[in-house]
Amino acid sequence: MTTRIVFVFALLAAAAAAQKPSLEWQKRTTEIEMDLRLEAAAISEMGDNIRADRGFRCPTVDWRRTGRRVPTVEWIDGLPISHVEAIAAAGHDRRALGLVVLQSFLRHAMRDGFFHADMHQGNLLVDAAGNVVAVDFGIVGRLRSEEHTSELQSQFRISYAVFCL
Image (cartoon, rainbow, N blue to C red; front, side):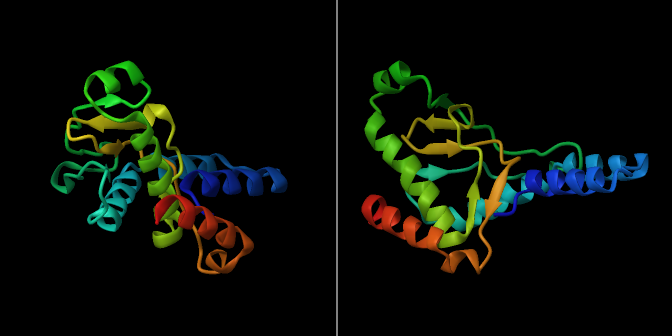
């Protein structure tokens, strides 16, 4: 699984092993990590992948206003998924929302090979229509094609079949 954060840690580990992390190398690594166009690209890729999916979405990126230092996305009006009382008061089924989160993660990982790798309660909202909306795509994962044929994929396929079909 490759993520931007793993990439940065790998660079840091390589530099530490060589015991020669130059100031220029540290500067370049930080510039890569702080280029927020990468996060915007992850949001766009996820949006393309899930366009036909029901119950889960992500913000749309405004590329005209997005740059290296500022990602601009649509405003999401929603309840944090951790606010269970407010979600229940709004008439949303918490168990159904939980199933959407689980199914969506498995679908994204297994079908698309690309998934939100930081889906904690602070990064998930529930909109007025009852959709789970993921935000903060600073950490995403990607399964390489050889990982799609591994034992891990077999286990994911079982989970996917149980929870998503």
